[in-house]
Amino acid sequence: MSDTFTMYTTTWCGYCHRLKKQLEREGIAFAEVDIEEQPEAAKIVEEANGGNQTVPTLVFADGTALTNPSVAQVKAQLAS
Image (cartoon, rainbow, N blue to C red; front, side, top):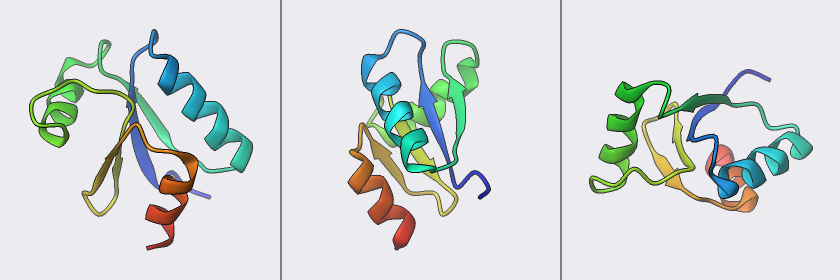
């Protein structure tokens, strides 16, 4: 399975770590970008969250985004 979305994270984000583990357990592939290591990525997160750098933010191939979603929400988005 190819990467179907990009997860924007930080190293210190507990919600990010939890979601990554859940997605890996479900076998859902994704690309990960640390917004502190790649400041240009922070702009993408801000655009998806009304100017806030809220992580985890997932951006899908169709341009839609989810902020701090559950695994069920990610699965629903991938199925649509």
